[in-house]
Amino acid sequence: LYQCWGCYLAWGDGGCEHADRPMITRSSSAVYFFPESLFDYGFPQKGQVHSSQRGALEVVIAIIMVFPDLNVHLRLDSKNTADGVVKLSLKLAFRPTNHQDLWTLFKTHLSIRITKASATWIKGHALPEHATQGKSTDLDKERNDAVDSLATIAMTTVKPPPEVEAANLNDYT
Image 1 (cartoon, one colour):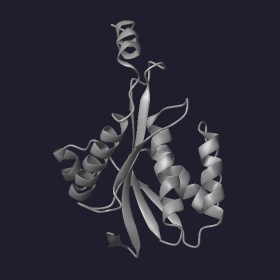
Image 2: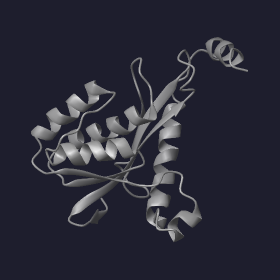
Image 3: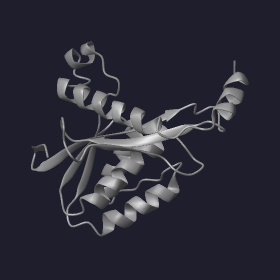
C-alpha cells in the first residue's frame, strides 16, 4: 500500500449513469491504491437508490470495514463525503441531507475502529492546468482517473435488459 503522512493513501470514487432515468440508472463504487495493487477494486451499487455521492460513501465504508486497523486517508472527489468523513471522525457536528442509512453505517464502523479515518477532497476529472493552478496534483489526477475507470467498469457489469434500456432512452430523446 502507498504510505504517506503516517497513513495509507487510497483514492475513492462513485460513478452513476442515467441518474435522471430511474428505470435504467446504475451506479458503482471503486477504490484505488496504486498501479497493479491487489486491493484496487470496483463494485456495482445495489438497491433502489443510485448516485455518485452514494458510491463515494460506500467506498469509505468498505475501506474502514476491510482495513479496520489501518490508518487510511481517503482522497475523494465528492466534497460532501470528504467533509462528512472528517467531521464525524473528529466528532464534530455533521447533518447529512441524504443517504442517512449509509452515514449511520459509517458512524457505527467508525466507533469500533482502532485507528482513525480521514479524507481530503480532490478535484475530480482534473485537467493539466488544474495542477499548475494548485487545484490538483499530478498524482491525484493520475489516481482519480484510475479510480474513475474502475468505477466505470464496475458500473457496466450490471445493465437493465436491452428492451428496458432502449425504451427508457427513447423516452428522453
